[in-house]
Amino acid sequence: QVQLVESGGGLVQPGGSARLSCETSGDAFVRYTWAWYRQRPGLERELVAAIQTSGNINYIDSVKGRFTISKDSGKPTVYLQMKNLKPEDTAVYFCNTRPVLGYWGQGTQVTVSS
Image (cartoon, rainbow, N blue to C red; front, side, top):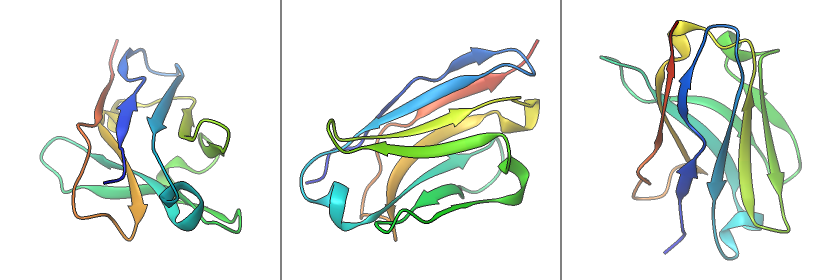
């Protein structure tokens, strides 16, 4: 089973930054597209950013220019650097492959509030 361990969340002031990490494992790290998803209060889980094995990256419009997804093959870990955070970014953030595996990690809570 592929490891999915998210960390790095917390309480952040509007305009602040945070970096999320996702520890993964095994061949899945190099074989699959990896992505960050989030579930905002009262809403369904949504894709936020994805990085393909080719290196191509996609973001949803609301985070373009503010979020950066990256991978460190030496660890192996997937990151989500978030800048200029807004209250509407408040959510539980999850990493997973795309398409998703049949399970999720525990996620990491990001709360953007003054």
